[in-house]
Structures are given as C-alpha cells and as structure tokens.
Length: 95
Image (cartoon, rainbow, N blue to C red; front, side):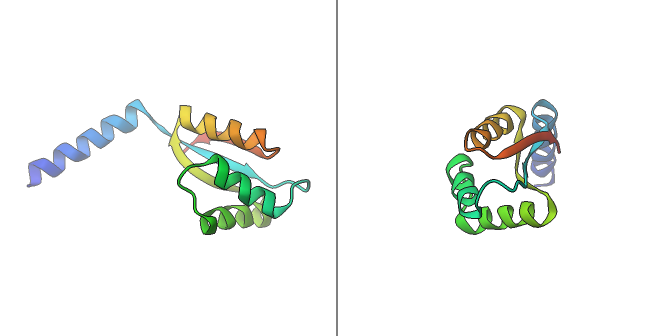
C-alpha cells in the first residue's frame, strides 16, 4: 500500500512539473453589475456553481481581486479570454 501511495505522489509531482498551475484572477471594476459578473463566471468557467460564482464576485468586489480557478496555463488563458469577452477584467499568474 505504501509503494502505491508513493507512486501516486510521484506521478502527481511529475504532472505538476509538466503542467504547472496558474491562477485566473478576476479584478473588480466599477462598470459591470454584480449579476452580470456572476452570470459571466457561470458561463465561462465550467464547474463553478452559483454560490461559488457569487463568492468570487464578492471577493473581487470587496478586495479588488479574487482567484477564480487554478489550472494549467492553456486552460487559464482560455478562461481569462472568455471572461474578458464578457467585458470583465481578468489576468493569469503563476500559482
């Protein structure tokens, strides 16, 4: 059992080296309504639920920015581009 866990840990570490994680950051703005931001998050980032999207929107609203998701660079850039196509400001940075 111990050797299996070690193999899983090693494979996870190798995957992280090959696909390092990146954060998609949503930035607050004074242009978009809160409901638009939540709807855009739900439409642009698969796997987010309404409560998560609302929490992300409120974090960005109250603190200036919020981490939307953490994923490999190619996906992070896709989600950023989708959010920007909705008129939101988003960036990608290493996790």
